[in-house]
Length: 293
Ligand code: ZN
Image (cartoon, rainbow, N blue to C red; front, side):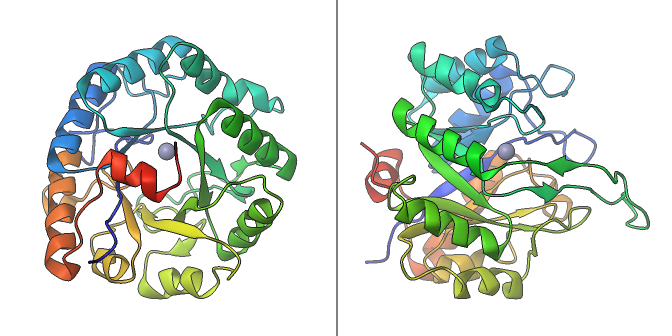
């Protein structure tokens, strides 16, 4: 009996609708999409609050409306964002929505920890120039420790996002210092297209991660590819006992006919079953696998 596969849907990030018209933005759109993804078998739903015009919508009212709608629709586990675009030296500002949601009885199940600082510049669409040259995403060790400890206090499982293999080492250090509880649930991030800030979304990019997971780190890992298709790599991830974090927030999937998130979920559920006979975990099963109460 193979380990069950945790399927996370990365619903929208900051994607606009020029590549895929199905990107959900509003609380109602996100809620309906979460329902459809759960019905298709998905385990976790990751969202960014957006305005009706698609801009980042990090007001607490929007967070609250999205969480409220998702919780009313299904038991899907929820991974909320910490608002990376809020470049503030005061980390507690980024944590505020998660804290307030918890107080209001709408606690998300996971929140991300981006395990380092990076240049996040993108290329232009044709790849011949930089779209930006000054985008630095700062996550100091102190900030990460603050997030990890605060999230644990709130009962939210920290979800390290790993941008390169060295960040696996910091994740291992955090676990050994008991800042993170095991098993650690982490996403191995790769990128393609306009984004070049992490490993390439290839077998070599994945293998580099897998060959460098510290022996001391108890980890359940998901693979994600930002800016490119994860479907090419998914069979290998499934065969290697990994989990999948996929969605039209990361990539529009034009070669698949610009599907909805739920359609992608259906594809992956079928693929996991075909390739290794792996069933997709229910939310309760995933909680158990990840050591969540
Ligand atoms: Zn995100």
